[in-house]
Structures are given as structure tokens and as C-alpha cells.
Image (tube, rainbow, N blue to C red; front, top):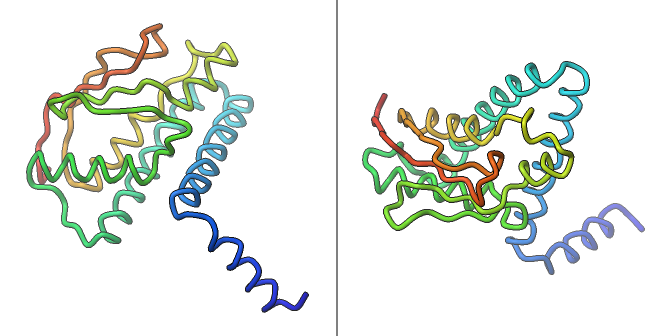
Length: 177
């Protein structure tokens, strides 16, 4: 098969796949990479170093992905709670795959509820709940930094602590920090 024929065949095949399915595939690849590098780091440098670097990497990734999302959608940094919630919801729906995470917001929009988390599921299956520090705090810190907001969060419940879900309360937001 000639190169152009191969390209045409690939485009035809991918044309039958929905954009949602492609997004899920890319997101799953990201989380697979994330979990494997984290475990490689832990095996080579230990949990303290692994958790510290995981937070730093997640924060950097979150910052870059939020910048890209805002640019793609031609959005400005949020100036109020509604714009902030819109940006966070856009990021969640864009970057967090539904097959790996089950989440929602409470009726006030100030508390995230995570029923199922890929990282926790994997760590729990390996019996490493106590050693692992959740990287989602770093990811969101990166999002917040890219949006130029300071956010104080409170962890009310956590799957790692034996709760049936994680609850993360947005306690305070300062815009244009």
C-alpha cells in the first residue's frame, strides 16, 4: 500500500470514531503514562520523592492544559464564581475521562464529589493507600494558577481514608491574585 493510500485508509477508519471516543482514548493514554512514570519514580527514588515530584508534574501539566484550553476557546481568566466554575467544568469534561473517574458537584457548586478515581483504584488494588499522596491537588493547583486565582480547598472526605467518596470543598477564591 502506498503512503497516501495508507493515510486515506487511516482517515477513513478514524472518521468512523466519534470525537468523544477519541478524547477518551487520548485521556486514557495520558493516565496510563501518569501511573507508570509515578510507579517507576517510586521504585527508583521512594514514596517521598515520588509524591513530591508527582505533585510538581501534575501542577505543571494542569497549568499548561488550562492555558491551552482557555486559548483554544478564546476565553479570558475568570473574574467571578460563575466564570471560575465554567473553567473548572470545562477542564474536567475535557481532561478527565469518564471511564476512569466518576465525579459531580454538589448543588452549591462549591464541593466536588468524586465517587471513583483511577489513581485511587490502582493504588488501592496494590495495597499502597497509605503511601500515595493524591496528585489531583497538584493538577487543580495548576489550573488555578493558569486562571490567575488563589483557591483554598478543604478535603472533607477521602477514598484513601476509607470514606465512600472524596469531597473537596472550595472554601475561598481570590481572583486576579
